[in-house]
Image (tube, rainbow, N blue to C red; front, side, top):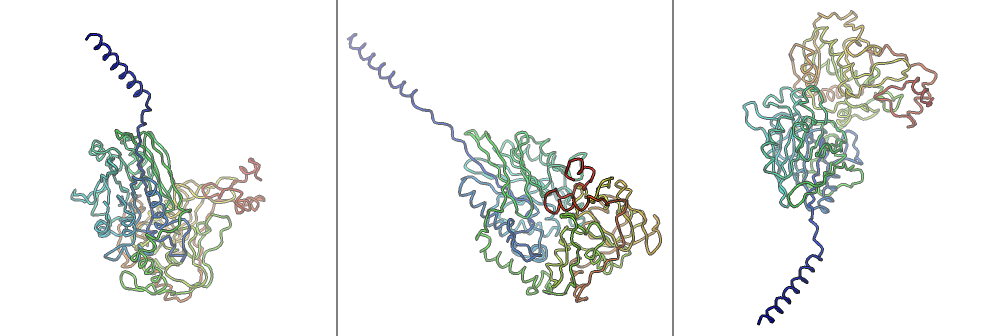
Length: 592
């Protein structure tokens, strides 16, 4: 019996040995990582169709219709996709600003976002351009949450949600929205129902609430990576968010229309250009414990994507696009029932002179007929002594021939109203100095005038009703000289009235503490409407320039100047927008 038992024991051990050897020889299955893709849009500015209404032209690389094609492609390739928007989506063209932002009911931008099945939208500063009613309306229309964790009503209640949590294949993703805290600076009274907090501390509060509830934290912030105004404490810069909340996994930035793609610490950071030109793409890989083991960020140009039928063949969006083109041509009423007039005037010639140097707008180097027209209309409607206005786009012009609403939008793209405010001579000069800071200081050897890249062109106002000089040999704050009012030097104590748009009143005169007085009059209609009415009355308009201002303190003469400009215009030298052509530097570099 003992012998038989030993034989059985030996046999069992042999079988076990073979089995164990087989198990150890088997390949061990690799742990499968989960892929999560987050797509983000920012600063679309109402460009649903992919169309420039002011030019009556299809675009070649922008619009939500192209974005839809790209989103559809990614969703067909990746099972788990999240789509978010970073604001400034509801404003920006004739369709939105002149028609659907002022009407009740459906909105073509929100319809497009619903069709694309966005997971969230963060409020941008331009969402406040039309007041509280539009903020409330888009929340009702949207099939997704509208977010802004750093904004509340003045009574302390939530105006929109601070965050949302979505789930993809078991991965819980917390999405925090942060709007731009400078909205009151730009939209003044329209933001009175709300209070705004710095982005960093507001984000940290929400991160502390949700970090144990989610696997991935995404922050969608309508600010640039670096502060715009508050360099000291960073209340309006996304770098403060990273400093206070290093645990966030994805950070979307926007507002400044810049392409951003970088990994900072363990956070993937991305931003995109405006009008739907680019889509930000974040790819995360997670292990079985939902830990992120790989991350990347890319920014995809929409130039290679066709228009999607999802947008272009939606009945309501088609109707909205046609209503806009009909409005411009005079075949449809505006939101208040008035017509745009179709072709309501004629321009005798082109109003803006041709640029001498490619990319350097002549309209900001000298007084021009376009600016004189805008300021003349502002003075006429306000009854003010002095008017200030900006050339919002370097390419703004009134071309010879028919004038319609698209023409007016091209020279005045914002739906601003006009204010009249009392100022002293000293305050007016301070405002003019603030504006003149948009130029770079001239140095010997400069043969062109350039612009401060930190001061966007739309911040440069030109003034009518006074004569003045801008001495660019002098530093910022000391450039405005020889200011004359009605043929006499303007004294610091003299009292004047100033016509200025509502945006500049809030963002410069008050935010920069340039003027103590408050508005004494506001126009019942927009500045664009005033321009339309003026041209309708004139029938045919002729360029008029009073040359009331000029740049001094520069000497651009050089025997090499023509050769240098030729190189720029041929694309062989970089456009000297942010730095002047300097003959001494060009010669030292062997260019000349």
